[in-house]
Image 1: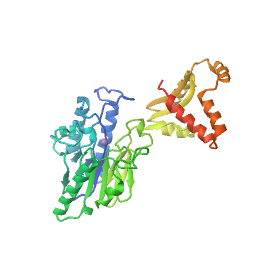
Image 2: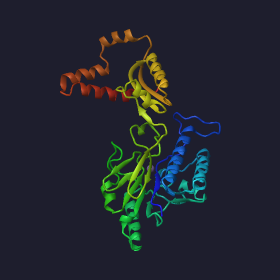
Image 3: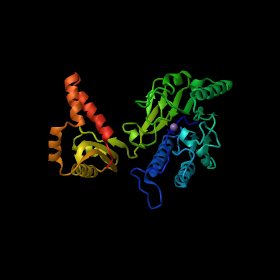
Image 4: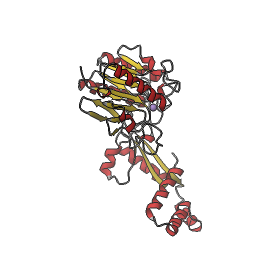
Length: 359
Ligand SMILES: [Mn+2]
């Protein structure tokens, strides 16, 4: 029996609009990138000697409605994975796959794949003896998830086995995967305490490894500006190790002013790049856009507070009469605070964010 398998999560198959094109066959280019990454994960799983690809939820993006131009290429891909590669694919229900709040076969969009031989769709908790994997789909309330994990554990012990030879896969929030979110999910420590060999969790879009062999799988690719800085890709799981492979799909990145020319080229090429200019004229903006294009970006978003082309002098004289909001803040910080320049920079960044527009 092979003890190697692959795991993908949070593919969010969708006709994404930002930066997408439609190819000659009518396929959305961004949907194509995601399908390609699932295929890559499947191929790498086979190369590593694995026979199964697990998908830990949110295969689809739009709850309760999957468009034919998304569904049909997805069916084609999964058919190829099971026929050409001979893989088994196990697809767990995530919240985005579901029309309902809790997982059920009737409301799970992934069930449309179950007619493909070799695809198993997990809409209710299930144990797979062949690779000793427990899968628990999405339930809105954490206590329901806990209840289902307990039931599966009871099933494991009824088989005369101990949990530490089994692996748990679920779709649920885990605290500490994404910065800035309140801790209202599972703690990794709680999941580790169940005593499984490993726990793999889909839902939050960032790959992260916790103490106690608990892993946030991470999304298959970047999807929006919320993903800047997150780790997207897929996992190859062996008996002794878990290997994270970065997605090779375009990423959403922020232009960093500290990059030199060569670094900027490397970082920008083939990615979607956001740049914040602050106050800038139309000329500044188009100059930066051309620069980004020259560096090979696939798409760019330049955020700026536009100034009229010829108004520089006018603005200066205006400024001398009445301070801008930025100048007022600078003045206040200098007079009243010991934090000085770092605080002024922080305030300006917040203002840039608040005032930013996509021209
Ligand atoms: Mn989710």
